Length: 328
Length: 201
Image (cartoon, rainbow over all chains, first blue to last red; front, side, top):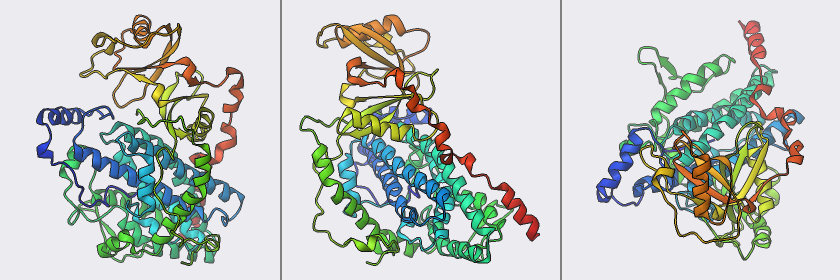
């Protein structure tokens, strides 16, 4: 799961104008033809760095995203839910492994990426800095956060970088179980007792704000992305993806008799676009920069895992091993 | 810091004293993984796992690549043991474009050959040749496996450097019935929604 491509600050890279014009032309023609870029191909510095950051953030989001749900495994209602949630959490961590490997083909080692996560240097999807108070929150994440991630990932899987696309194709197939499982959980709550319905409604109320933040700042204020769209790094605008999500899932929430906590939310049938209260982008920025309810805990849990596993990795490391960048 | 997860409150999450950067190879070497999704299909490159040795690489690859869906075989080899040809441009065949030279001579041994047919796709296992060097292995696979299909890139791996699973242990892959709960089809709920709508309309 992921809400990516939108947490970018400006990168320090070589200017595109300073790249070799011939190589750049070959590179752009290849993308224009719909061919994928592979690790051994020449690529502009900006392309490489932007992709590393994007894929790395995506990988971190999978790892951190497993935490709010992971803490519900022990408290999941019943054996079947426990089994399914455990499988889902395992999938998310598996996705992180696929993505770290894809980013690694671009030249950043896995050690560096993990260091940057636990030192707080790298970002991950902002939504996981919010707490999952109840089982209904866990259901919301499984269904709707994953739904948002699928919108995002399906778009990105049509991108230009081969290893990332292949990882995403695999991830999207696996996510379909998450989505169905999450929907199954939400339906069970929403069609259940009065208390269950109330729990589900409260979860939607709590999570709607971060869910609207999920696709990133409005196109009106978001950083310039023209060249990244031309290079098929970013495949669609934040607002388009948000609109696609609303189009697919708001009717499914409403049909369960659950309301969405935004009085302005409605579809404009003429434009085909959804209208909504503009999300609070100052809060988004504040939380992504570390001041959310769970930022400290999420990183601390990863730090603990890092420390506790260190002796195992040390014991297993062979003095003969040698690092080679993975192939594809 | 008080967490919503009671387990986390029992450990000292604030302790940053042990935070130090990872050492080189803390995440181990990489192994390329080849997966066969069913018995009639060729092995295909699927991705990478990090592992301290070949056996662990196989276990990680099995968990990563056969956890979901069908699988009838997995093999792994160290990334450094894959010898890679250049990749052609404009749909040209690498066997017409490239003449390898200068690889070391060895005793005769077996090599596995992998072909890339389309950019963006994965390398497929094509077959085996016997040769006394990578150059000879390349030339032999050109003679045997180069046909109408354009090959963009070739990978060669000495057979002894790949961990295969013994054909007699095919049973370990027959796990589909045990993992139904990992499939979307196990979570149908349309009846519930329909019933709910009828009762509340």
